[in-house]
Amino acid sequence: MVDVVVLGSMAFDSLETPFGKVDMALGGSATYAATAASLFVKPGIVSIVGTDFPEEHSKFLESRGIDLKGVEHAEGKTFYWKGKYGFDINAAETLDVQLNVVEGFKPKVPEEYKNADYLFLGNFEPAIQKSVLEQMAKRPKLVVSDTMNYYIEKDREAVLEMVKLSDIALMNDGEARQLFKTSSLVEAAKEILKLDSKIAIIKKGEHGCIFMTKDSFFSAPGYPLEKVVDPTGAGDSFAGTLIGYLAKTGDLSDENVRKAIVYASAVASYNAEGFSLDNLKKISLEDIDKRVNEFKKIVEF
Image 1: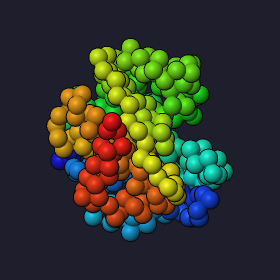
Image 2 (image 1 turned 45 degrees about the vertical axis):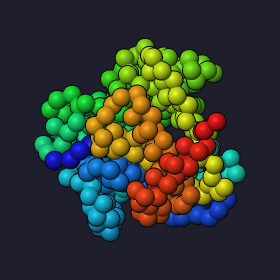
Image 3 (image 1 turned 90 degrees about the vertical axis):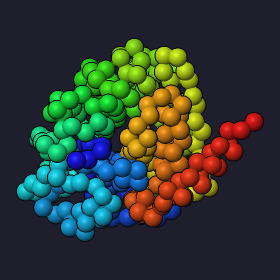
């Protein structure tokens, strides 16, 4: 049995930043989130890849204790994304997207996953996210969902429904403003809570994130990186760490969620210092604890 079920894409990424470029690197929201979560617990991935997906990538994920029973291998090519970042590292220019086997994907949750207490619904169509949630044998203790501007533009009402079905609705600042048609992130967070989400977390890239419940507010800073090499997957690494830490501790109190956010920010910052999963492959819990302690010093006054 797995501790956390992770729905999301497994992909090949080709990208260029001011600090270099990579071609056909391992990527995808499920890949980043599950790898980050594996620092704390045992995740299982629900996704799809093509016949061109290298066995070495699967072996790496399995070496991290990640279960791949929920990954479908279909005839065809794996999802592909090509992008470019300028010196505004928060904004990616998409040069090419090839859905390939993701098109028409109907996820099947393995029996061994259906009683998991923690579920992360990564970037996918809201209908696919809802399908995975409905396949769980019982309501998980914690459902975390993510979204992206493409789905907000395509089907805003379906995105709003997934926010309502989630305990924690993650989104970045641009997505929050777009979804709730407001320039105020505090107002957007309040709207998330009105939709029955217990917690609203709005990511602000290098500027950290805000956390809000009906009774509390917390603002976490971003870690001051000298050089952001590649921000791809930072948001998914954040999400995977968040749910992984909460699953490991089993504590969903406000205080512990705040700790989980800082751990998530630490892992995401490491991720952004290298291409693809290069840094996630290398960091240890000791590295993460060191950066968490640096976060504590940053916010003391």
